[in-house]
Length: 437
Image (cartoon, rainbow, N blue to C red; front, side, top):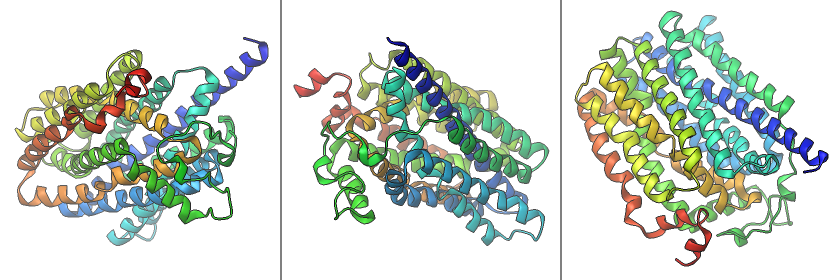
């Protein structure tokens, strides 16, 4: 390796490290917000349904922003999109405590601000994710390892964010937590601006590797017929025509719906009713994030050796089924922590597998719009899951709701073992095997 190559690799490693740090800090803010909003509603005397409505308004923009923002990410540049998304999200979140402490914040206004605050979250996450492969290649790191590091940064943010949010909400109230939330977005934008190197424009990206659906979509901005809506349609066509992408989106849509019911509504209600409040919930979420981080790190060492499909199905089932069952039977807190730890360890393998498969199958110039569509589809059930979780808690009760989720989650997540298009998951890991069918 020449001196020039060595310097370039060091710069790429520095940029990659800054990208991962910015992503972790931004996601930490989202975790804090996920704590602060429901407990703010509860502090005002809100019911389970109102907590569900607030969660609905905080997750709908994830779907909208994912679907509509991916093309913008491809067009304006990934680095710029990440910075702008963080700044706007941070400013909107900051408005919530400022207005609440000055003129007062009615419930409808909270819903408006929560919606606005989440509108650019998904485009910002997509932008950082799309920057990953170039930095990974220049840094000389295996793609599966870097995708695992990105997912690990999210897991770390859950562990840190949950601990901070639990303490802030318990000791100082949800308003203080929202100030910290706004600050995290500013720090993330600053890190990206100062330390993440700019890459080539999306339109100039390499088009050499032909992937499923690529012929239907030119690079963003190329040709007189290319406009926002045609680029958006091209991303949608890619997802709907690729059999594996369809299966991934469908499966994650269902599990995300149930995860939203648990995380956004049922767990805050359960903690408030049976565990003594936000501090206990902070412990559970921190355990989940910490164990997921450990699982993520451990999986990074064996990711290129294991069969993806079987690992994916087994870990997915363990990630949600046992934990929900423990809450359904009203297990004591130590058992809940143990079940949550098991779920976290298993969950650590999921996003690295999904993320690597998507990066392998989607051509570089289309990643923003395709990932935006994938995120929108996978998150389409999240707002309704949060809302249905609140309704179910107020009607059939917490225990029955957790029990139903435990059964459905386990059955659905084992479907990749049935084969079919799920076998395409192995193609990138073992090209010769994939080519032979």
